Length: 323
Image (cartoon, rainbow, N blue to C red):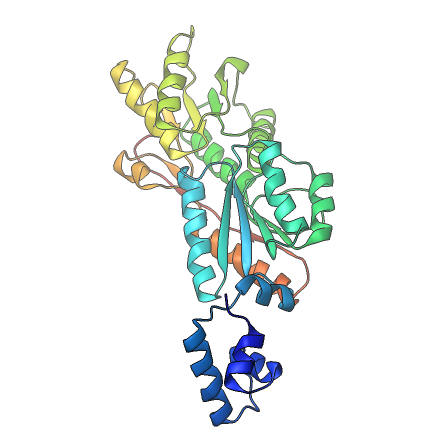
């Protein structure tokens, strides 16, 4: 493969002149520039982008760490990030972790060894102490609330639970079940804490038999409904962590001749298209915008344009026929 020295020899110019032409820098005469470009063509020279990025101290790549790529929430998040990355001339490197600490270390090592310029964390099972340690090696932006001194742009999931619970209480539903995704993530902890706090401070009731976790899919929702059906008494409502699980619950309830909402009210989270199709009361959250804001914050941190900060995006309750 040709190199700068060979180009300079063929074009009869200095190496520094070749470098200026390759980097579109001024102070090169048109004659010398044409000679360099002709030499590049004759030698079929392809610049080594890794070497160029190394010399500049940047890769123009940011990492994103997600538990599942095919989950609707993370799919929309990545979509928003990809949109703004294209505008900012950045590349996106996706690591699916399956909530495995060892898989998360892959992204952490990429930041540590400067293979990426920064790391966006969609969700993590790592501790605040671990994140603070990793943040020493490069900028981190978290898309869920967590302790630590790193940048965060996230949705207030506690507020989402409060909106749903207040709605159920106003409708007269007093015995309420809860179904979450990952209970160890920042999102899971925020939702569980907000739910428990609301139960403690209201006349609503909850039983340990009505609590489900690590449920992510339509099939998981069907399983939850089957488990509820086996109990001696159904709750009057169930708060569900995503729309697809809520849809599975409603689908199975119909097969079991359980009326929604007359026998069991169901709420979802995310306001996916399936929630609109099945008329599910849900929380609308700006997932696509969350991805955009996370990359904007990361770009500013990489280029030292602002200090580490937190940004919270608001939620909206969408009331439909499932409640």
